[in-house]
Amino acid sequence: MTIFEPGTLVVSCQAGPGNPFFSPEAMALMARAAQAGGAGGIRANGAADVAAIRAVTDLPIIGLNKVGDPDGVFITPTFSSAVEIVEAGADLIALDGTLRPRPDGEPLARQIQRIHDELGVPVLADVDSLGAGLAARAAGADLIATTLSGYTDGSTPPGPDSGLVKLLVAELDCPVVAEGRIRTPEDVRAVMDAGAYAVVVGTAITNPMDLTARLVEAISSPEVWRSSP
Image 1: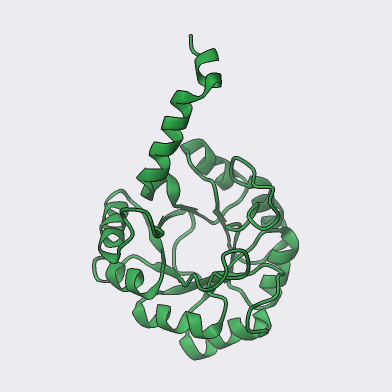
Image 2 (image 1 turned 45 degrees about the horizontal axis):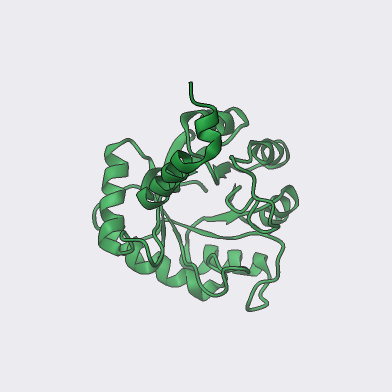
């Protein structure tokens, strides 16, 4: 069960509190711009954003619902948190597929089964390791994404985890989606060469505040001046 073609670029249109783009209207504009640039899908958080984006595009939407403690399982952590996202227009549900305990105690397999049976949409499991990917697939996930690699153990690397993509592709019988710290065309090529079915890019496209901060930091960094010709 997939909702987009192999080789698709999915653009993650999300903004948090404190970001000037934190509104459904702004995310809808981001989605329109992404589609105009050739994106084949959108990833969006929360019912309001999903509904606003659905109103302006017919691209497939990967919907999620960030609920609860950001230090734990909070990406669509329960079945109930998935319901409103599908009702808002999402074509696929993204959820935390790590091995961490879920807040309501329901097994991952049960949550996925209910999403399949009661909501009728595929599930993409965001994982952080090969073990989590294998477990999420065994639990019924239709696609596996590397979204949480480096974010659950405090060892976040600077670039995309193409190594995990390659491991998952070798072991799984379902599409593997690359996501996380993909910022350049070279990053995209690296994860595609590792076997990714599709690529999700967020910050590098839809977060100008973060991009500006990175450039400002580069200007003030002594390393930048030492490496200048």
